Length: 116
Image (tube, rainbow, N blue to C red):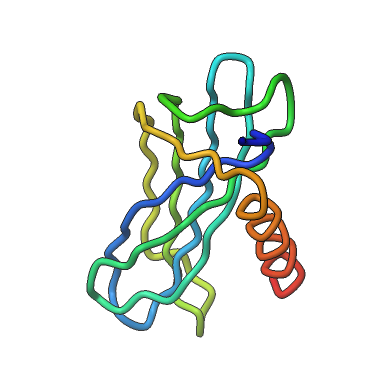
């Protein structure tokens, strides 16, 4: 059984080695809306990312189709200069973890948010 409070969105990003990325994903599924952020180091190869989007208004998420708006920013960690940015809007399939998995993802997400 799913609690629908969080949805998981995954993808890949490729950016030049030595840079860092920050991706914000906003999900809309009917009246349910939520967002999450993923950050990481660029290696020059496709990097997998996972965003945990927390439902913030309206009803909860369900497994299935949703609209996703993703914005990514790639920067040089030494100079803090933005070297690339892009955005996209697509229809996606979302996975709503339930039970213990949802609780663990919320705990991981909260821990990552504190580490910044």
